[in-house]
Length: 84
Image (cartoon, rainbow, N blue to C red; front, side, top):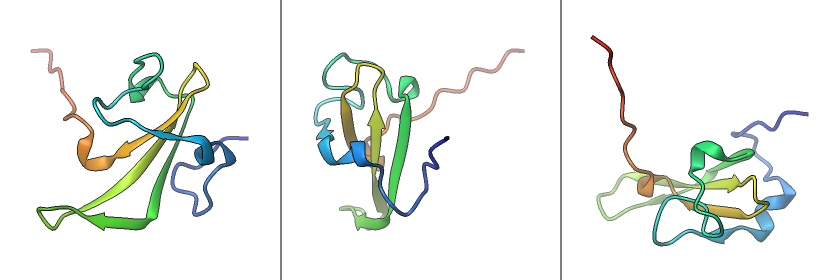
């Protein structure tokens, strides 16, 4: 069964998640959020940042079995590559 990243109820694995403070990646193995096996976003509890913008907790289950989370505002910008 595929997990809905925006489901209102958090999956069980989020209970063990650790906060990734330094970088937006798995604190155990360094894998990026794009390599996560599962993702869940806690959209029911937004927090206002210093700039008064909303941010959410994003939870990631890594392929190394480490569950981690970080704030959506900490996610690095996406680099778009355009071939001309």
